[in-house]
Amino acid sequence: MGIQPNPYASPSPGGFAPCPPYVSPVVRDPHWWVAPLVFTPLAALLAYVDFMTSGLPSGGGWALGYLVPLVVAASTSLTERTMRRRPLRLALGVMACAFAVFYSKLLVLVGIGAFVVALFTGDLGA
Image (cartoon, rainbow, N blue to C red):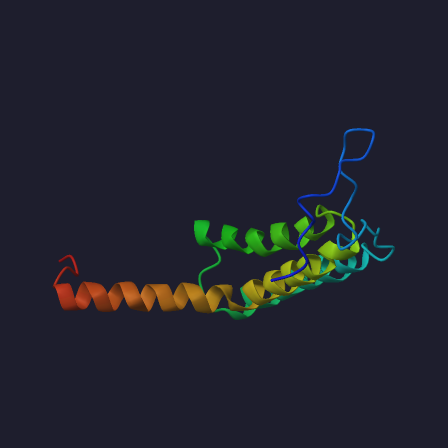
């Protein structure tokens, strides 16, 4: 359950309650720049490789979906630059790279699913 503050403690003379000892202070992360530096170009490279090897037509609005991993990877530099947010920066970078790799596969899977649903409902449009 964790440590609970004492509800019967007298307030400090300034009117503010003292910070509980179990709350860790904010610690700046000196290496906050590593995640944006690594994951943004890696996500761009993986998106480019997936786009070129997907075999899907190069035109169309579906190709704009490759911007999503780039935006997510770039957002790693926008998070709070503390040690507490380092796992978030790393998770965002890994998610961006995974989405860049699997985006075309996801499009094919959604297309197959839509075809199967249309096939079983008899709505293939003739």
